[in-house]
Length: 218
Image (cartoon, rainbow, N blue to C red; front, side, top):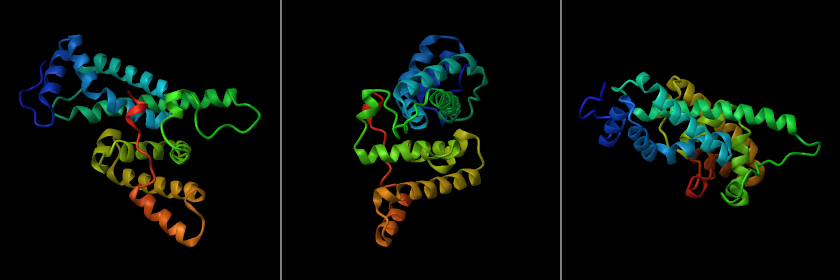
């Protein structure tokens, strides 16, 4: 079954790629990789916090797309459906890595920031790494909404579509995430009254949340 012509929510390249993939033509998958890989790796990286793990998550996600393209509703946007596969894979990888770290934890205090690769260490300044560490310490659901909203610049509607959550749930978890980040980042911004007020403004506007740069995914 091929995609209908001129589907408004799909680019012409996506339409051709999905139609080919439905015929089990691997060139369709290759086209989707070119279109969506970079953004998908950024999304996975924001959740799992490690480049190699993020790349593995995205590779697995594309395999699932190839295997399950018949489950995709061609009358709906492709990106939310695909992003949900990436998020679910990243959540599983995060839980697996957390269990592994607990099992291998040394007796001394662990580093706040993963030291898995040179790319991870080079993402940003000390302040940015501190912010990323704070994001990684959020509860899973809050960490995911922060990744989608601030690292991928998704609207709340797009987040709701991607995650399959009601709009109110997305809004509540985003609010909770901002509150928790404000508390954890207070020492970075300052503890006096003026600094605390500035911290609230900065976190509401997300001025202190570092973007995931090209260097983490290229």
